[in-house]
Length: 74
Image (cartoon, rainbow, N blue to C red; front, side, top):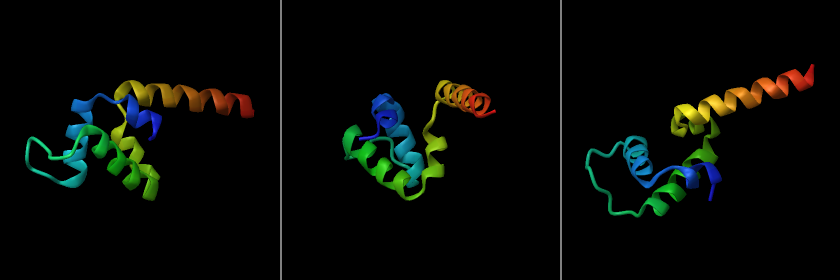
């Protein structure tokens, strides 16, 4: 399983899964790990959706990493 998805708390996975799948119900019949697997399958088919699942802190880290790589490239 994707380590980014594995690091996201179960409650957030449930909320994100609900949004991604367009589900109106509060509770799901799937476990958080099953939801992570389905989210991963969807993201592998469309990687740009990964940004939808990144917390503010994750986006900050990604931005810093990209800046470092760009500096190293120059």
